[in-house]
Structures are given as C-alpha cells and as structure tokens.
Length: 354
Image (cartoon, rainbow, N blue to C red; front, side):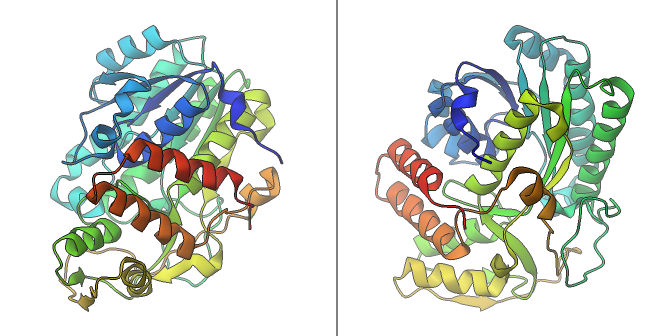
C-alpha cells in the first residue's frame, strides 16, 4: 500500500501528549505535511525537552492542560473541531508507575475515557487512534511474538493501566461507535528510541547522559529482550492507520507495531551497538539493581499490520542508532535541531521498506 502523508494536508488533527518525546516528533511530521494541529498536554516532563529544543509550539496550536481534567480537555477539543484524533498522553514509565500507581491509572485509564467522551459528544471526528504499548499483554515470557488476540493483562501499574486503556477503547467502540461513523483503532508499539528522548529510566537516554559526562553506562538489566525501533517507525504506522481508516472504516482495528525479529535485541547488545556508534572510548557495566518487576522477554507479531497495509519497517536497529547518535551530537554541538529532525524525517520517508 502506498500511503502518502499528503492525506493530512489541511486536516484538523488533535494530538494528546504533544509535548512528549513521541508527541513532539509526531507534531513535526504533521506540520511538515500541512496538517492543522492542536496539541493538548501537560508541560514537558523533562528538562531539557524535545518540545522546547525544537520549538514545536511554532508549528501547532499548543494547549497546556491535564488529560484528567475533562472540562479543560473538552474546551480545547470543541475549539479545535478535529477530524482525526491521536491519543498519546500517558504516564509512560514502568518504574514511575510503581512509585505513583494511582496517578498512572488516573492518567492512562481516565485520560482515555475523557478523550473518548470528547469524541462521543461531538460530530466532527472521523478517525480516532489510541496509542498503547506492547506491554498490554499477559506476558508469559515465551519466545514468539504476541498477536492482537492474546490476553490483555499487563503486570505492573503502567502496563496494566494500558491494558485497561485498551479495554476502555474496545467498550466505547462497541457501545457508541458500532455504526462505523467514527473509525476507532489502537496501536501497540514496542520500545522506541530516537533523538530527543530525555526520560528517566530508559536505556538510550541513560547512555547519552553517561556519554556526555564521559562516564561508564550503567545497565541494570542487560539480558532483557525488547523490540527496539526508531521512533519514526511507529509514528508513521500511527499516521497510516489513522489516515486509512479515515478514508475507509474497514481498516479500523487493533494493531501491533514493532520491528522484525532480527531487531529484537537484548539490552546489553543494544548498548554495545550504541557504544560503537558513539565512539570516544565509552563503555558500559552490568549493575543489576534488584528493582521492581519488569518483563525479561517481550516480542510482537506484526503480521496483521503487514497483511492489512503492506507495512514493513524502514530502518534496522543499526540505522536507528546512527540517527540517535547524529541527533544527539547535533544537539550537544549546538546545531540546528529542527533541520536535523527534518532531514531524518525525509531520510526515513524516502528509504525503502525492508
């Protein structure tokens, strides 16, 4: 399938979580495509943040608000009158969910209820996509990838709240949008990496922080296997799903979005690749810290996305890490981040699917 981002030209798009890492990249892609974007989110959760470094606010209408505040969200939504809604707002860190489970559930579950209430009570929306995670599944630590029909039952508060977010979406779809007047989908993506991620307790940001300080990289779980992919991979898939179901409701559904099996690496191998790309003699050390439970082995089966849309990943992990290092060194050296993002987006769009 030849999906073209020009489908978004002049479309009114509402993005929750636009100040985050993925949200900032998504808004840049949409703005470049000529979309009329309204973002609704809290202020960036990190300092520095990609949203501020890349001055994303100049590309969109940015509304600062809490997804838990239905009244404020509804006011922004009604003003925007969106045709397409992309729901990314979340508390996304597993370890933070152990520290503050109630906030995690309020944000990830009731936030989903609130945005779907906005969709339900207006007539403008034709396409809604809820972005969840590969961690929504009951993880049995088996060696094959999870399919979309597997049981949803995440272990920790973050993963479980995203399982709940999926179920909320399924219920709203069945209860209020069963006639197809709004196309409803969810997308379950794996671990993403890319320039501009400054979050705590994520391996690539940890690597970059250590590299900048010329310190050893501390890896707390080097033998865990994750489906790593560049951030542009799932974002392109989200935009593809939302646009295609906007045109034809038959594309609405629940989709895994992840890399091919050869890019499901142990974290230690990922760090080895990063160290080689970065240079400067940096190294890493294994320091398991006995922290709260996190999955050791997790892969996705993306056959459905490939079958329905003819989708394939564009970049392998080696290329993805080259882009991460390129962006990071551009930022460290005071380069033009917006131009760097534009060039990476263009390189991605013009690369052949593998």
